[in-house]
Image (cartoon, rainbow, N blue to C red; front, top):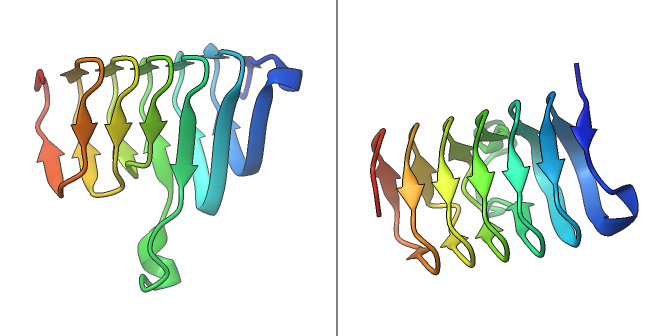
Length: 129
């Protein structure tokens, strides 16, 4: 079930993190599952120097925190910071993007490099930014 190409000495992981088949995690990636599990779907690619953080505000009840999911075939470029709790399948997030926990991303979206999404929003399927 869980197989990934991960240079273990190059990843800084903390908490309950699941990678499904075919995931590739490049060097110097930090993944922190502080508020609950993080699940990466099949064939995800995470670029080097990226940070994936699941930390929700403390004022949320534990049952509202849930799970952070990054859908299958999603590519996260180098140097990104991702806090979004829900990212659909087949997305491309360019290098050096910042995606806050207030953002929900549908399926098939393309987010260009250096984009900062900090306001509460939901990107519908196939959105290009």
